[in-house]
Length: 447
Image (tube, rainbow, N blue to C red):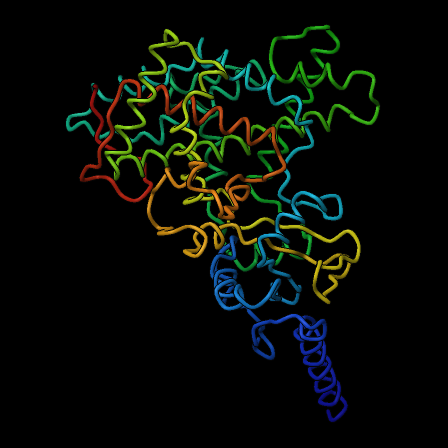
C-alpha cells in the first residue's frame, strides 16, 4: 500500500514538474507572458475556436511595450505578434520561413483573372439573385425577407457553375438536397470547444461532419476528373483551366487538383456569404452610406448598359471601400496562424523563436484597435480613401482572409461585388422588427 502511495505521489510530482516547466517557456526566452495557473494554465480562457478572449487580453496588455508576447494553448507555447512591421515581415518578406496553416490552396495566383472571368460569365447568364429575391418579396406580407438564405443559394450556384460546370439549382429549388448537405456541417457548432482546440493543437484528426463532407466532395470530384480525362471532355470551367495548367506535371496528381478546387470552393463560399450579409447589415444601419453606394452603382452600370466586367469593378470605388470596411469590422479569420520552419530571429530584438513555434497574427485585435483606426466600432468606408491614409500606417493587408492567397481573395471580392451590385441596383434595404445583428432579415422594397 505504501509503495502505491509513493508511486502516485511520484507520478503527480512529475506531472506538476512537467506543467511547471512548460508554463515558463516564454519566461526563459525573455518574452513577456501572462501569469498562468500552476496546473491549468490558460484553460479557462479557451472559450472559442477563434481564441478571441485570450488574444485580445494579451494584445491590450502588451501592444505598447513588446514586439511579441507569449501565451499557451493548453501546454503548447504560442507567440502573439504585436508589432505591425513584424507582422508584415512574416506575412510577406519572410513568408517562406513559415508554414501558413490558413492558406487553403496552392493554386497559382496568375489564374485569378481566369477565375474572375468565369464568375462574371456565369453571373451574367444564370445567377438570378435579384429575381429570387423578388419572388420572396412578393410572397412576404410585411416586406421582411431573409436575404442570408438567398445569398447562400446564390453563392453556391455561382461557384458550382464557375468552378465545376455544375448547376445546383438551389435558387429555384430551395429544398435542394445538396444545399442542405453542404450547409448543415458548415453551420454545425462543435460539441466541445476545448476538445476541438485540443485536437487541433496536438494534430489529432478532426473527424467531424465538415471534414467528412470535404472528403466526400473530393472523392466525387476525382471521379469527375477521371471521367473527363477518359472521354477527353473539357467544359469551359475553372476545373478544366486548372487541369490544362497541370498537364504533364506528375507532381500534381488528380487527388491534389480535386483537393485544391474543393478547398477553393468551400473557403470562397464561407467568406463571401459572411461579407455580403455583414455589408448589408451595416448598410441598413447607415442609410446615407447605402444611398451613396446605390447611386454609384446605378450611375456606373447605366454607362455600361448593365454589363459586368473587371473594368466596371475598377470604377466602383465606393463599393471597394464598403467591402474593405466590412472585412475590417468582421474579419473572416480573427487570427492568422503560422509555424516557424526554422529558428527565427525577430529583427531589432534579442528574441529568437524556436523551430516549430506556433505564431498568431491578431487580425481582429489590430483591425479594432482605436489607435490604428479611429472609432473602430463605427462603419466608415471612407477611412480607406488614399487621401486619409497619408502619413498613417493602415494595416489593410490584414483585412483579407489570407493576405497572400490571391486566388481566394479575388474569388471572394468578385462574388461579393456581383451580389451587392445586383441587389443595390434594384432594392433598398432597411431594418425591421425581425432584424437582429447579422441574422440576414431585412425589410426590402423596390426603388
